[in-house]
Image 1: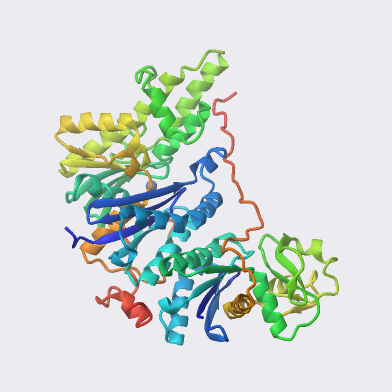
Image 2: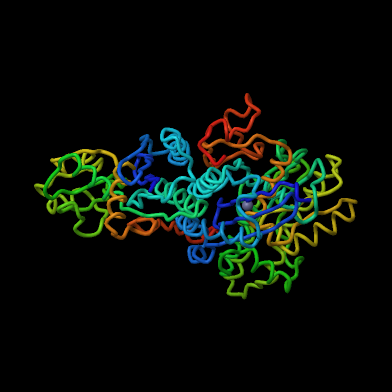
Length: 219
Length: 368
Ligand SMILES: [Zn+2]
């Protein structure tokens, strides 16, 4: 098994290769505005580091968000296109699950939450109990969920951004494709289902309805 | 001519997900998935809706195009993609897909200019473009007169709209007349039953001291809207067919007059018209009439190739391959305001190295 994992749902552009047992190579960069430029060179670096060619990959894993749309789509369309070109399956995983997995591996125990920056003064978040999500990921204003998450450690950049709402922030700050790949490998080995590689936007598109036709004749 | 370059082209600059396959100047496939119906109720293209639709349609449209062309992706000589100009988020979906596809197949990647592609598509219909080519590009997003001595490397803007694009004016007038979106086809249809001389609407920038090749449709739009409002205010019926015909006539009169003049001034004996508005039947007819009178040969692709599509991108990509233009590199990004003077976006290293940049960057990490 050789999984190529990518995630562009957050400011991190992260890529990893996983051989079914462990992460073989990993690279990443944090830059919220250049996902489109950075992803392919990162894939190229990871493959070079591992000394393999893309056609050795047996499956693609992609973080499906939630995340700000423009960057999120870069990873999803790249993964889908690789899948089509290589005729290999493309598996989706919730990006927040990747962060939760990394936090647990880092020693975080008990229930906790994960929060990433959703911009517009909101966070994407989800709760985890024994490593499993309890409920669907959501998007909310930090102040609106402070009570629900009171007393819980909160993992990720969303927690660091709003210390008043989330007084117990924990690492890691950013998702890593390595964690995502490891989680995917575990789930695949256990025969568990992964998500379809489709975006979790969690918000309706901003439908900018053009202004109504303005009367131009002076009254 | 099996040695002509076989190229797949991807276009996502606006609301059409287009994937085309060409061999040299021969069209093999032109697959398009449009989200226009979703935008209709908003009266215009909503960028985020377009981007979401591109992501959904991208891979299925690529696969459909390959199937339609009856070729294997392995046999491609290159992947071309619209790098700009266009909607930033929409462009990024196509550029990312093209990069992944080119990388996975170990093919050179060509980020090309949307406007140059609109011109180059005519090679699929009427054979190689004469050099130089005079082109009038008219759509909802652009209205320009371009002189292209070499479509892969030298495209010169002679004039452009100083306010609205021609297609935008059609959409706006259609909205004033409650005809829905997009406005071009319905105005074209209604105008056939109207009198183009019924109302004398103004011809923008047509004075002797106005810029010879620039366009303006904002004044015309206002004038038509005022005329309609005056009728409504007086409690009279608006003669929709006559308004449509007279408005359309004002637009195509200016477009064709300036284009023919540019041909004469530059000593170019043919004119290419492209872009979505080139599907307008009156524009085609008047251009034909005026070109014939001036001894100019008119080249207009069939309507399906005038609107945004992947075949036009593939056509320009094939020309890039045929002329040994340097490929783009893996850092290629979308440029929503890519100037027309840049027909393509070669990689940063391509000026100093003339060997295959794909191998240079990726060394042995691709299919050998
Ligand atoms: Zn166009």
